[in-house]
Amino acid sequence: MRELVEVIERQFQLENLGALERCPPAASSLKGPKSPAFWTPLEQKAEGLMTVQHEQVESGGSFTVRIPWRECHYEHLQGNYQVVLRRQVASHSEKALKKKGVELREVNEIIATYLLKGYIEEVPKGEETSGWYLPFFEVVNRSKSTPIRLVFDAKAKYRGVSLNQQIMDTPNRLNDLTKVLTRFRRFRYVFAGDITEMFLQIRLHPGRQDVPSLYS
Image 1 (cartoon, one colour):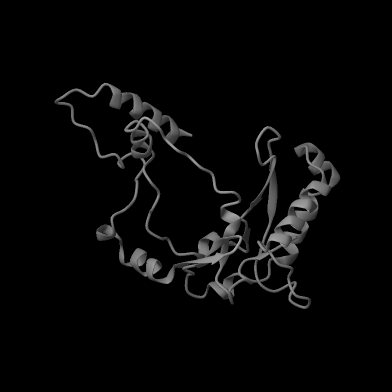
Image 2: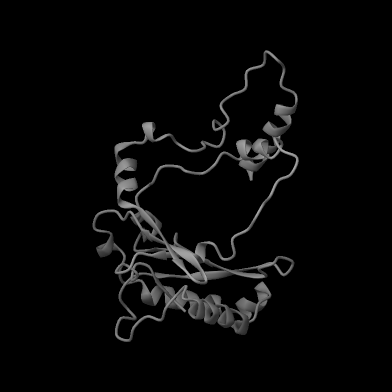
């Protein structure tokens, strides 16, 4: 929230820039994209391990990503099935769902849609307790185009380990919001778009889809 306030404040400051006033680098407040020349050795290694491949199909396409895992990650990401199962049962009780204003039927319909579209797949019989499971929860806002959004908790820990901790830090590629907002003022017309279910269309590299696994 504080970063958003800073962006708005800087936007108004740009309106009052004097001829001799010095403007700080646009990325100074939000730490925008990092030049490859300043990547650390670990960031360079992570960049080399992470690959992104676009697969074009008749219905559109998707991206397949190879995640830059830390060494020995596979040994750490095991055994959380029962913990995640208990959390999901508790968070999807009738009382818990009623408090959030959502019905179990609606959640099941979303999961069924994910299966139909190929975003997720059922864990094979006999492998239910292996791999790493991500608990999820619902964010409900009936006024939005996506009234119920499932959020997968990659910060959830088991024995002090989370999935996020097992992924190497990659170079910052986020665009500086100040630059983005400023570019909106350069032209008379601006086009904006939204990618439907964007993150769900990013797939894991084949062969490593058991980390993470998905509880459904």
